[in-house]
Length: 167
Image (cartoon, rainbow, N blue to C red):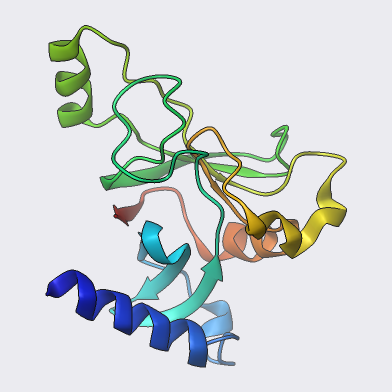
């Protein structure tokens, strides 16, 4: 029931929140929420919505990332811990996957948990795709937005911001 209520809330947010308010434009997010089945990322400050983005995910978006190469976007609680302004995907903000639980699970299965999961823009030299990239899930497990959106996110998120990724 909580998932259904959350999905409805997310739908309402996407429908009605398309731009930052004037007062929020200089505010940093203190949490990021990604809802995979709705393909959205929400930036929050003190529980209030700052901005909502439609996203593309890993090529196999259903289920939690278990191992390197499974092309899944992880699910759980992480930290946005560093950024790369020279990424091969425009700009990129690193997600602290794997956490201790992910690493322990992978070890119990005898596999590598993988890593290098990011929020990023479009591949360099393909920025003109813009919003068309959202028509399919195309990453290896990352969360992708347009380059223009990545510029906004870059300014609205500080290193150390928590991110929760829900199914």
